[in-house]
Length: 321
Ligand code: NAP
Image 1: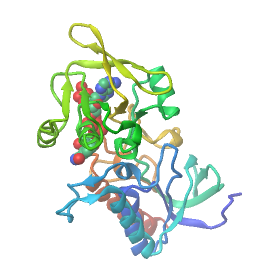
Image 2 (image 1 turned 60 degrees about the horizontal axis):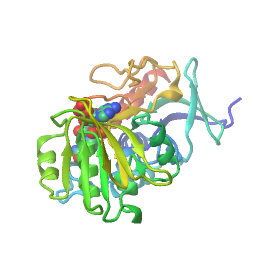
Image 3 (image 1 turned 180 degrees about the vertical axis):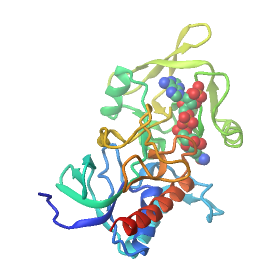
């Protein structure tokens, strides 16, 4: 027996651009969607990765750019305006073996729905060093979110390090350059993965420089970060770089662990969907946004697939009612 007797038409798990766009479309189709938006402090934070982005410059319709949190607040309000209901909780397991589909949450019990849209996004990766975990958990100056933590007093006018060579590393470095005395990007190759335009802009900042062909082999510091040990990927030589903050920007992992083997996943954990659609291996279950997109991973593509998922869920409900 479910904790919530009502069988929902559609439950949307996740509240980034994909989740809110799916909710807007499903609500306007009179499906009265329920969004389980995540709780924060866990893998799935309400609002998703854009909550960590100050300035979004490539979302169409905002020629001056838009604050990531502001954009998500607006999307949420738009979904609510058309009747979306919202639960602040995490889904911890699912049972898609029968109709209705069942979703178990951390605190709110079990929900049931005819159709489910999974839009749980992806989360930041870590290097896996013992001191990295220790200093990240204790608030000792290791973070995977410059936008959340960069403005902390401990980092003001101090040398800071960003690990990674992609767009995230560039945007984190640019953000941190507002606060730190110097930002050193540590990249394991001699060529960046980041888009050229963004990289050129960031590297033109006199406070930013790159340590090429280098990996972080350890993070130094007892209570607070004092430096990093760097390994040269060509010569193997080790050296120490003093810094007061270390920010990880080494990619993301999709939030699919709670799905178990309920739907087909790629070996990397990303959800498998039909080409050009959001249908998963389970009829009535759809995937949208970064959780199924290991190629584009943009806010606007997430919103696009959120729209597709809602339209496909609506069509599936009509055909299967
Ligand atoms: P990403 O593109 O996958 O880049 C990850 C970076 O981390 C790569 O440079 C990679 O090195 C490095 N890396 C991975 N594992 C590592 C390890 N164990 N040790 C050291 N370095 C490691 O991830 P992302 O930068 O988070 O970007 C993800 C997506 O979001 C991309 O599609 C990106 O375009 C998008 N994004 C866009 C913006 C924007 O403003 N438009 C901002 C942020 C992100 P290698 O290069 O050697 O593989």
